[in-house]
Image (cartoon, rainbow, N blue to C red; front, side):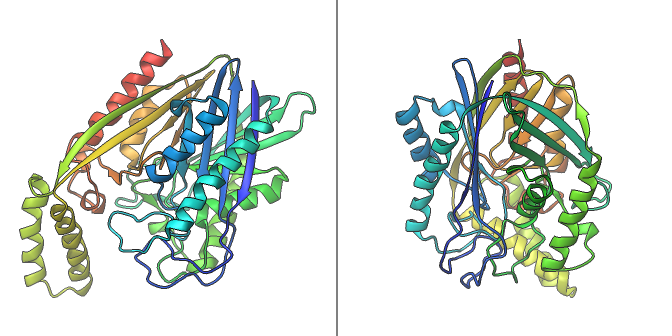
Length: 408
């Protein structure tokens, strides 16, 4: 096996718009670097690329030109290139989230294409004979299901160490965690990769090894019920606490014999004008707004109503959902295109108990929230989902089925 890695700092030097919380002001300073981190894994003639941006979302306007450029340069098919992001709500507005009204600087967005290609190319050029080790721990008392404190949540942190086979020195560390990076709220105007970026920085400093980080299935997971401080102070507290708990990583048995990959792709149609949940909930929310004297309930109802009416105003939308499935020995990397709630992510993990499953969320063209049947309509996530009831369950089951085919 060979591995190559690159970290590219792409922090804008001037004030920019920020995507997240509908901020109207330009950024005011930088709290921590905005990066692209790229990892290349190669075995025999198979090459897999994972390249992750510090951004709230990522879309085909950048993904497809990057994949085309890498294909033309190295002959690597689109299906073997994973492009994703960490979902920080304090990075530059490279893309316009569906429910936000933020100005997108097309020049800034276009610059991402060259940056991705540069980072991936540097990773390709740094390929070395390698091996890996893998560790895991559980994080307690810092984040959980944001709708139900005792609800389903993935509190595991996986760390994969890629090592140079000859020098025995680290090439990079690869961390996976599942938590919304929303410690910094709309009042923050400093560019930041938020919680995941701070974990990445602190782990790098602790180990003196370059590090990349990916977000897993955290659609309904955050620090909501565990907050003690605010803003940067809370960011420091939570990230430091996670790093401290990572002192108790335990080693997992791994093998890397055989690198195989496949993809699954399916289109789903959504129309808020005919969706039964949207059409029944709009009049209900209007009634709540008319009758309620509770200020907080009134504000929430107005926000939810706005989201539903906005979805209805768009008419029919076609979402093309895409997943990469990679088998590296007894490790499975599975990418998913949006905010995957914990119950759905857990279905995938539970389906492959003989494998170490690394789910990478927020990859490919961002498709908002994936909510399972049993939770559909109960919580905030449904109101900003562009999938009808049952679509998320169907897609996840198809990903599971396609993974089983790959493992035969």
